Image (tube, rainbow, N blue to C red; front, side, top):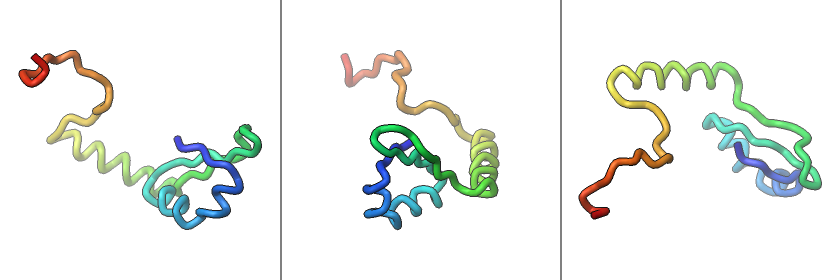
Length: 76
């Protein structure tokens, strides 16, 4: 979840609205303290979950950032 200050949100509102539209949640802060969260409509979140469930039938869906522990030939 991205955190953004009120003044930065005001200055870049279209950018943050686009991120929310794409499914991201934005935490709004004032003086470093969270005061609100902007979340996408539930319909979009549900549609995204359903798309991931459908995709998981033919692909591996999961954490792609954490190390897997595999040693690749290029790493040797």
